[in-house]
Amino acid sequence: MLKPWFAGQPLLQLEARLAGFITAYEIGVKQPSRADAKAKHARRFALRLAPDLGFLCGILAQVAAKREANEGKEPPPMLQFLPQLVDADMLPRTTSH
Image (cartoon, rainbow, N blue to C red; front, top):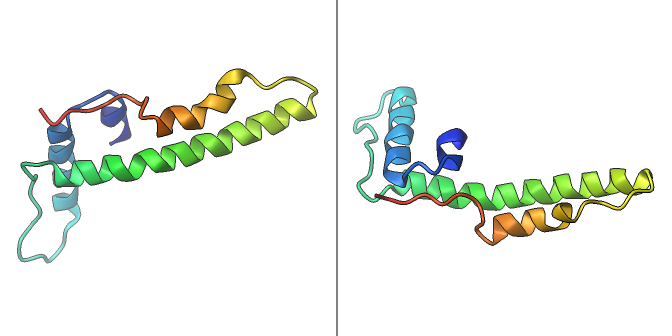
């Protein structure tokens, strides 16, 4: 799911992929999941993923900055901005069309 999301695939296409995945692993349900016309699953996926990516980028930036400091080097400026880029919605955007 990450590769299509980062590639900017529309949310409705992501919804179809997610619904297919959910349906494949649902066992013994009376009413199987279907793709939602408003991309409910894809929107939830995107809304939950972005904050986690921001957190991960923050951790990676801190580790890299610490390594640079231990070697007596100045950390690259991008390390400071990486978490903010995710928080500022600078990741590729998807549309629901």
